[in-house]
Length: 248
Image (cartoon, rainbow, N blue to C red; front, side):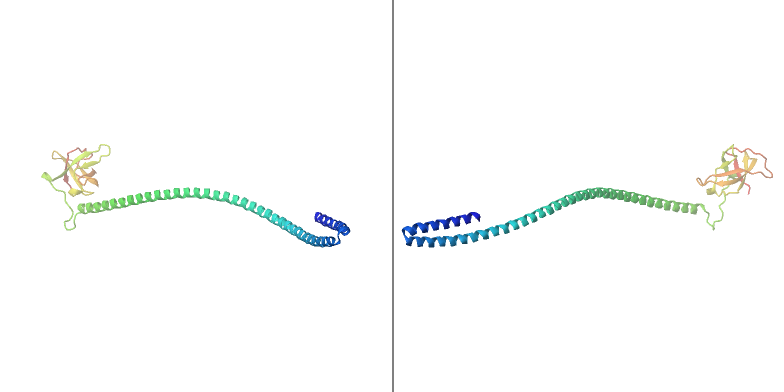
């Protein structure tokens, strides 16, 4: 603005000088120059106004630029904060992803254990079913055996078969420690607990015995003990193959 003012003043001075110079020489040319000077002064004033407007526009633009720059800095600060928050979120996401991976692995292990337990439960169920089946078969066989070994009511109690001389069996074994006698006859031949038999050796009475137990493993065997009584020798010593004759 200051330079423009100097230029205008310079033009005015030149115009004045030119007027004086041409006034001396030619008055018509001087008037023309004065008009041109006025025109130039008017244009200069307009130019000065435009410069002033431009200066004002510059000030406005400078202010707007300053505001925009402040806003840009504020936005940059916000952007930096957002980036920082995003970085923190990324770290949280990575941590969550690691937790998810660990949980997935644990879930797979649990599913494997469940599968193994189901397999074991299935085996246990199968074993129980097999046990129940075998137990059922056992019960059926025992019932059948009981039916076979129990005399029918219509037939009455089974009697031991009697051989020559009234012999119904023999002593199969003698236990010298306990005195127990194993007889070669059992429930299959009609022997019962409490039956008493006279024992003969070479057709000579040597003693008397009483059945005390029937063998469940072999129905053709039974166990007896010495029975004392009238008409029999006391303290008899029995031997294998001694004959048994029914006493009562």
